[in-house]
Length: 336
Image (tube, rainbow, N blue to C red):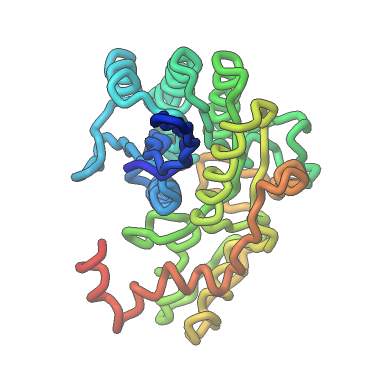
């Protein structure tokens, strides 16, 4: 894919010289998206593709046609990938992002969240690609929100610590990189269990028996499409302006517990919610501690006009869950 650009050409002919403006085909910029099979990775690929970029997406266990299969913990494989495709931008979405899984399988998670990130950042610096690392609000302990980019992190669980270490490795090896911290995400899912937000759909539909849901931890559910747009805007600006570097925050504005999200989902689809019961104590079942309120201050992005207006939760959740309503289940077999 390429884009048209203006090019001036001088034409000499007997007795005259002409300056002619011609259309020249400029190669489209290349973006490499890791974790392109995941919720955010798919949205990032779509956003860049729709904006005229040449997108190279990678996956591993879930790699599919039109995506490259690459084990990001294999240094030689990563070097070959970057050498062959020579991306202008790398958006690193791949991660083990499930806190309880990270607690149980720490070594594998640290290999991906820290060591693979470190290697990618180092290679990005070597090939002069702009590197954008996706991080999390879980680097904070949630005791004193809202959190700015310069506030001291204090993660409560192994997942948060692994992502914080990934941030540090990113900026150590690639000082011109951007770290983008985001909260819990939802979006166009392949199954409702793919996001902690859309998985509440199952609880909402189980109307035959009561269901308790956390009503302590304050979350800021954010549409992956909005995050993808911010990623593109950061990449485009950073290619023109080297001062775009360091840590940024992006988050939706609506503050909700899991219980409040479930109630909002029920209301959006005109479903009963009497069976949903708020749990006002921290659940003992979770193996990983979560911050009570890790609200992100996003003013740095906003001041640079690099943010977007987040989609309202009700309309955004409707977009993602309508294919899973009983009369729309046919769509899953067609599109998913």
